[in-house]
Length: 68
Image 1 (cartoon, helix red, strand yellow):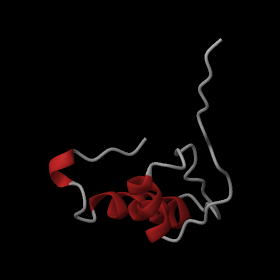
Image 2 (cartoon, rainbow, N blue to C red):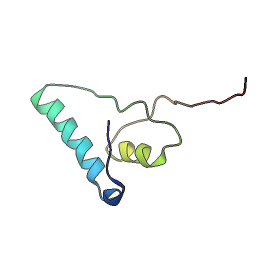
Image 3 (cartoon, rainbow, N blue to C red):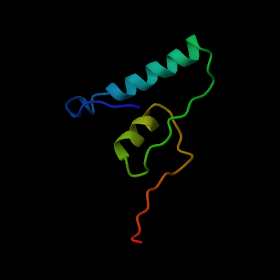
Image 4 (cartoon, one colour):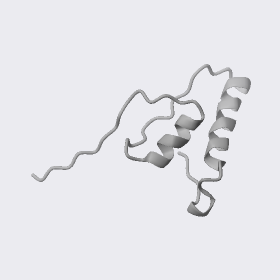
């Protein structure tokens, strides 16, 4: 889960949080990969954020609605 209060968004805080977690996983825990998944395709703010730290989109999650 990644959340930044609205007053502090667009300041690079989310990117820094992601990079710190990556660094910890890589250097302290020996991880070689990570997934930043389960974001909706229309959540442009978070999708831009994860792409800005080097993540590549490889799945799409959509919510469909239909009356029954």
